[in-house]
Image (cartoon, rainbow, N blue to C red; front, side):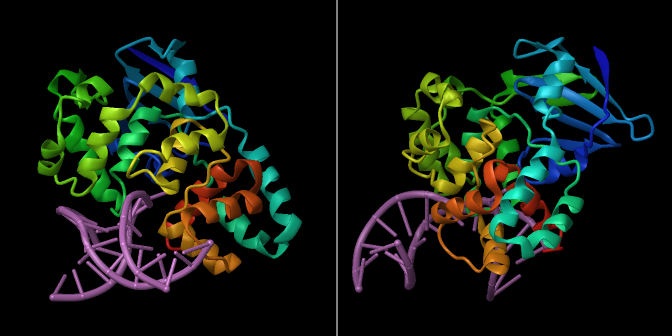
Length: 292
DNA sequence: GCCCAGGGGTAGT
DNA sequence: ACTACCCATGGG
């Protein structure tokens, strides 16, 4: 079934899907193919009319109708103006000389939105992301979902795989993961699957960032960087501030600070304020386009 | 062949 | 708290 949404806010699907926050969306002939919280979707953003055309096999996403589900998933109700204004105010408290760079970052990243993704999928995918480039991570994700043909969904000409839930993943052991070339992450993944209580995990949505990080970092293989990615992209906690090598280099270059992903998280929160997670994603995109 | 990647664990200072 | 080293593998 098809529907459409008129978009009257800034939205750049290319940047949003390619800024490193999600690994399973892909583009073909101007259309985007992906799965949003268990719902396969085909999206086409008509630049001329501003209309977002949606194709799916259902009328609802997690209890919301399809239109509102997409608006929620794409973060279209986030006021990017307010987020920018808030960050600017925070920056000017101590780092006003950074303002011009910040304006460049905002211009470069215009239209990027933080997706409301499934926290379970985020935990698995970011656990698999350690010490790997994005191309490799995408291949791992694709390899993993294809293990479960029962999750295959056909929509028009296109194939989709719903992300496996915990019970499905429990059917795999470390050897399976090794054979999928997950390397030393295989044992971490198997142990996490064995020990996680998915109900407790999903209840974290209502918790503070500190509580989320405390819970998540108890898993072997989940440090502060991965935990912050889960908090930001899975639990939509905009005070999360994931620090990978790119963000670390950026903070070193412009703010002359060094440290591990935990200490630099506090630095990011201090500099950029309560929506630092959003800013982090803009910085990540900016640095990787070669501007930074 | 070489260095790097959306890191994390561990052991030794 | 900070550092050095290891981990397994694919990209560029």
